[in-house]
Length: 93
Image (cartoon, rainbow, N blue to C red):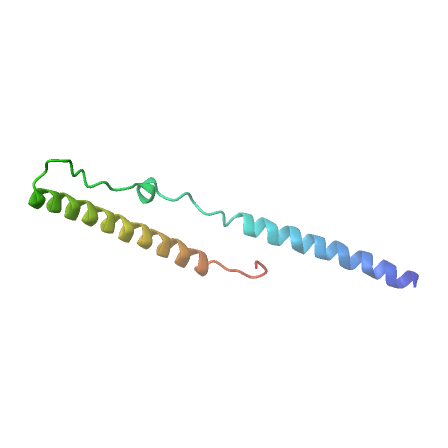
């Protein structure tokens, strides 16, 4: 019985060391902040009294800006994810 307890103590120390190593590697993978541009909102700027054709053009420009922003943010995220997936992940869950 005493031998068994001594063996458990050695195993627990190794598990603690492995856990600390895994934690250190996982901590290196802290995500960078989202670009501020990705948090911006778009407004059309349509005001009461604008002609309908002018209002439609303003809305179309705002929508185009937002779609371009969404595309940039999605590409940024895809590159980030690809970079994280290419890192060695041995032992990190």
